[in-house]
Image 1: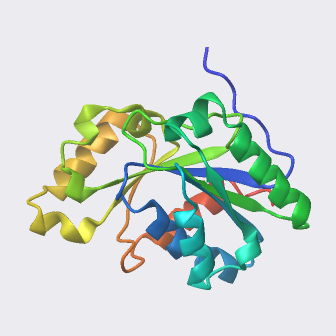
Image 2: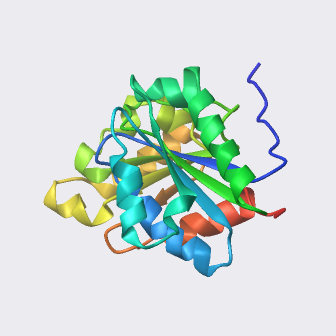
Length: 210
């Protein structure tokens, strides 16, 4: 029997996973100003192997107060810090909740993953998995755990489809088929296309009671 999801009594915790280069940080950069514009009280945790590169990028962006961004250096396989032993990420999220009153949402970006990556339900209430069309339209057919089990699958860089000979409608159809009704959304994080729909989905499924 699948382990039930933990019920968060504080800020909702939403994971963002996906392969290196799929657009996880770009998605964060598009989501942050939109969430703030909607009046959401948010913070961010990023994961990298041995650096704080993604956290520094977000801090320098000017999109969010730098003190609302914490970095986790996993020091090993990124899967470990979000699945097998998410202690460091749990502590980072706890620290942010302790520091900022009435925090509603903590976005937790994983390090570069492969298609087998999943988030521990002890860490997050909801998780998204980002793939991109440049990786090939056969990605859904590979049926990785991220494709199958994520609460929301995001197919990013849709604008590149004609340039990399990807049949985007087929890719979407196959993603919907293997996910058996779980939502699939399309984005172009270079322009922000589709990101409002992602936030609408989070608002209705994760933040509805906040």
